Length: 102
Image 1 (spheres, one colour):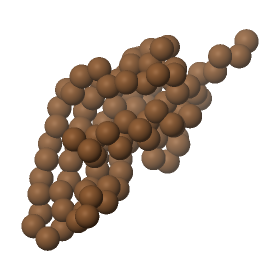
Image 2 (cartoon, rainbow, N blue to C red):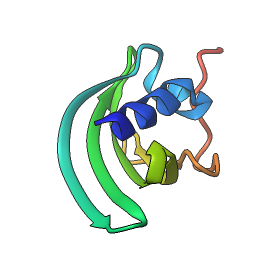
Image 3 (tube, rainbow, N blue to C red):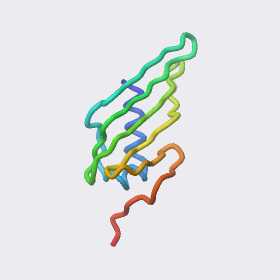
């Protein structure tokens, strides 16, 4: 799915996601998917995917709207970290992001 590929590209570039999961973030499995299409408007997709980086793994919830011409807008992008902490990757909010510093 091209929209899911765009979501994963954004997650890989997100500093919060990299702080929580580490580098080399990849999609491990698609846990759930919901699709709806509106004629003349586009489609709405929601995904729940398990993601993993070099440091840890988590769950990612993404809600997107794909308009005519392939234009994708990410409406929600929420990462749940390995200990249940929740990060809003659209607004950049959540608990303090772990760092590698001592």
